[in-house]
Amino acid sequence: MEGGYFRYDKLQPREYQLRIAENVLKKGNSLVILPTGLGKTAIALLVADSYLQQGKRVLFLAPTRPLCEQHRKSFEELMKLQSEDILLITGKFGAEDRKYLWNTAKVIVATPQCVKNDLKKDRMNLDFGLVVLDEVHRAVGNYAYTFVAEECRKLGLHLLGLTASPGSSKEKIEEMSSLLGVKNIEIRDEADEDVKEYVQPLDIHWETVDFPAEMDEVRKLLEAAMEDRLEVMRKFGWINAKSFRSLGKKVLLLARGKIERSSGGVKYMGLSQYAALMNLTHAHELFETEGASTFLEFFKRMEAREKKSRAVVRILRDYRVVQALEKARQLKVDHPKLEKLRQLIEERKDRIYIVFVQFRDQVKKIVEELNKIPGVKAERFVGKREGVTQEDQKDTIERFRNKEFSILVASSIGEEGLDIPVVDCVIFYEPIPSEIRNIQRRGRTARTRAGEVIILITKDTRDEAYYWVSRSRERKMKRIVKGMQNRFGGEVKKVKGQSRLSDFG
Image (tube, rainbow, N blue to C red; front, side):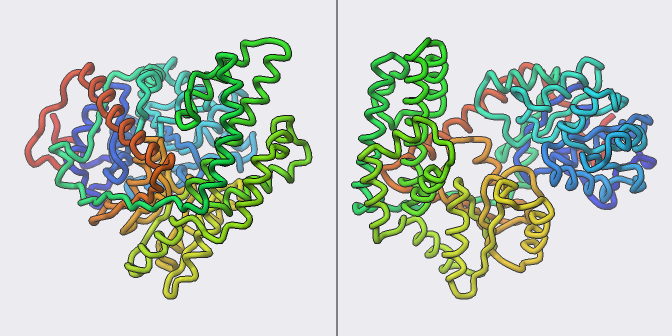
């Protein structure tokens, strides 16, 4: 292996990384599930090294351009390759240029969408030995990953999927495994013996606030408006839920499916009721978990639409909604989470934080409030829908890395895979029911030193339900994947003191 490409002088792989890489090479198409910060990319580079030594090319896929740029950087820093041997191909190149470029480098990094487009237009062929799919939990449904993975599998290419969190749905995990033609699943978590020594202490706890009595009247008005729509849907057998509290996304999607199977005027009435209930449910969630300003901003956008659906018009005319909006405008209290967040940061101003926020409108407000604290500087980190370019995002991350400010207030864009610096503390402004996003958020701390996660929860609201739902789904995910791993047999035996891939013989 002395003549290999991996730069052992720059990064000494950990024992579990070497073992996983060896299993991937021996067993074929693999799914690697490893918590954020435990080095999935290093495993992919070790496997890529073996293929490059055989004179075979490597295609490395990631769902966003910033992630692709991050992976290109990893190849440049950790592999003995010339810069022209590593190529990041994006839509910035013209179609004819891409047709030529696909065949020029030993390592190609690209988004699945770019590959899908050029495969369909016959601008490229899949002349690769290894195809790595980062954030492979995206490879379900109609996403470009699905198309590319199927094409690669048909050609018998070696597929390696990487993720920190495949999800808690057995059907989706099975679909992902089937799509990749998985013969081997490698899963490690913080409790596994070969990983333990590399895991930093992580203190996870929640801070609760009471829902203000002054806000309860607005909440009850919204609930009355929701209950009317729910009663209609129950009457037609579209929904069985006894209360709006049990209206999860799955229940609502099933209801929509039933309505779609209706006909004539009943169908259109049902779809209108469904749309109204969806909007009211979202408004109710904003008010409960974020406060009046975010709630009012939502309705402001609704009122500003030039073309309003019948459902929206009826919501805006509903006397309870009209009263709720009027009372929300008159409120003298803000959501207590904002004050709790201020207190937490004022107590420890010398720390580096990421504050994750579910709703974009709230990001701006939180940044404004935190910047009122003497000695504190916060900046927002949001996506393209807010008019922020990828260059802007890169600039923000670089300034955060250089400690030009100490608090990054991020929407969901900050959750997945981006090369955000390690922080002392991650704060969830609200719990989220997604186990995938939960794991990704937590992974932003406790990588190289002890970390802390604080979850803000408003009592007697959906915050409490979301917290326990994500906990339950994460446990379920681990059970499912561990069970699937057992179907694929044992591991390569441990070789004491091994320090590189060649030590497994």
